[in-house]
Amino acid sequence: MKFFIDTADVDAIAELNDLGMVDGVTTNPSLIMKSGRNIKEVTKEICDMVDGPVSAETVALDADGMIAEGRELAKIADNIAVKVPLTWAGLKACKTLTDEGRMVNVTLCFSPTQALLAAKAGATFISPFLGRLDDLSLNGMDLIAEIRTIYDNYAFETQILAASIRSVNHMKEAALIGADVATAPPGVIKAMVHHALTDKGLEGFLKDWASTGQTIL
Image (cartoon, rainbow, N blue to C red; front, side):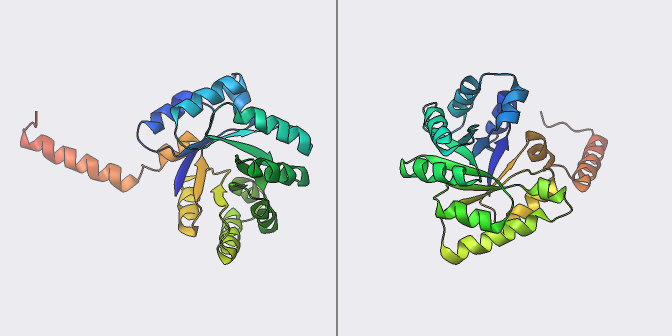
């Protein structure tokens, strides 16, 4: 499963990128606002840093506006994936931009039938939002599983990009189900390394090593 980092914080991206943990980046208007930086400036910096797709989101509500914004965002770098919402206007923009050879990430997906439409429109990525479904006492992983089945049934090439990930368990379940990509905040990615037994085992090893009075260097 590919790891995308869901942030516009270039320092956080750089830290994980140096470890080989970054296959791409997703941003949205809220993350750009949080960064406090100009969208084109920060997006260009991210694109220069990572080799994989960097999602940059349109904000127009009509198809023509999304297409125009998408073309402008795509000028930032060759690895831009234009992000559009899962609306009829967004699907129209997806089809046009995809036909022009651009990567398109269709976002705010909450049903398998929406995902089917996005695949038919040629989306590069479909972004089902797990955490927001969980907030409604629904199981977001059921959506990932249903999309996986539909896409496999018909050999759609659209990649399932599990989004709105909030926990290590989300990452594990998305990988088990077969999501192509998971996009998560840096903190979730870093939390994946922790386990109480790892900490306990390391503590025991160090205690025993100290008792030998030896050094390696």
